[in-house]
Amino acid sequence: MAVKLNRKAFDKAKRLVNSGKVVHDERDAWSEHQASAKKENEFIRQNGYDEYARWHLGFDDSEDEHTKARYKFPYGDFSDVHRCGVISAESRAGQYKHLEVQQAAAQLRELIDETKQQV
Image 1: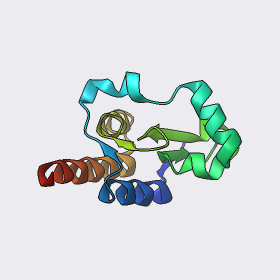
Image 2 (image 1 turned 90 degrees about the vertical axis):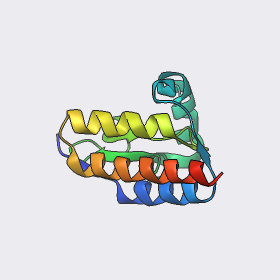
Image 3 (image 1 turned 120 degrees about the horizontal axis):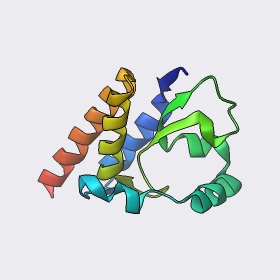
Image 4 (image 1 turned 180 degrees about the horizontal axis):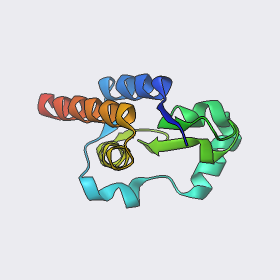
C-alpha cells in the first residue's frame, strides 16, 4: 500500500477553514461526526469520485480511482472540516507512518486552532 498526500484535498481543507467552514469539536467526536457509508454513497452518486477524493487527505495509489478503498483519512462531513476528523487523520497517519499525510493534518489542525482563537 502506497498512501500519498492528496494535495487537492489539503488545499480544499485549508480554503474551507479559512472561509469559516469548520467545526471546532473535540478529539473523540469523530466517530459520531464522520459520514456514514450511506451518506458517502449518496455523496459519490451526486458528486462523483473526484469530489469525494477532495474530502480525504490521503489516497492509496494501489487501489482503483473509482472505489472508496482508494481514499484515506477523511477530514470532514462533505460540508465542514471537523477538528476531530483532522486529529483522527493525524493520529492514524502517524501510526501507519504516512508522514506526509500526518504533517499535512498537523498543519491543518494548527490552522483550525488559530481560527478558533480569532473568534
